[in-house]
Image (cartoon, rainbow, N blue to C red; front, side, top):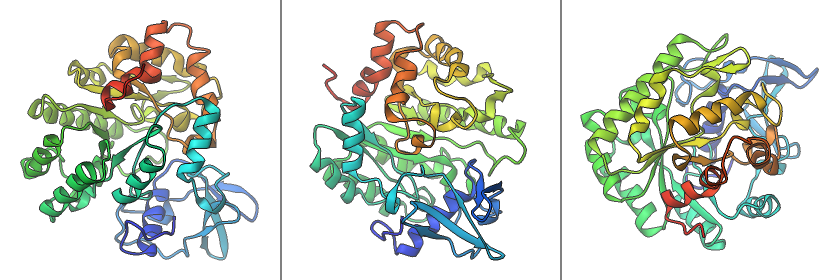
Length: 361
């Protein structure tokens, strides 16, 4: 987390880590007495934006595998990362070891502003395990309008020269929080879709962070993002795309139930759009394994979208905050008895294989 590769400097990388921790829902912990507290002080106004990050001596405690910051003489931490990453590292070799133990054949590596931003490094990872790994390519969304040609060149090199397999696009990181499907973005999206690889979208909710539970503004903001996605798909009807992490489940919680509005399903009339089945990392602090509270929601997803447009995902190693890699499989495979063998096969591999061009046989 303090390696400069892919960044201007090590300090810029660490600033990205601080900004990402600022808005994450995991509680901050005061280390002197382990009392849980708020962490918005890390960046109270700007979410992912690096402008105005407060100086709280944000740093790494590599022995304990965690981030630490100091306010008024008190040290704090937050487990956005799971509490078992010595040196705050999760290497490609660590991933393969986890995959072997959990019986996972192939993994698709995600990207994020606080994680790897260097497509050449990701290419090196794929070369080490060519039959086991695929990778998304990072995009600096905030630079698209100001450096359009450069960003296009970077993503083209990532796919064509470095051999990455998909594109990751975080809509909350678009400069000025304007619509990422506006006409100003057309040159970028024309170039991206010409590469003919899947685009994995992480959509926002239109609000920086919730204060006291889900808000109507967040629900409406997410539905507006889905509307933008529908407009984008209408413009690029042949583009294959997917939504990472599923829906923002916490926004749609009503007590111990997930209540999903009908408007959520409309974009999936386009069969080129798929959805990740990924509950433990988002709700593991609320619901315990085997996550019986979400079984009904998964059944609804199969009915409304179809299993052939659902793909299993974990956010590994982040999901290790709440369950093991094996358990992130078993809650579906061993407990969701409403799934047919064909539906289970689609969710657990065939959908991802189709999207990524992998022979799942």
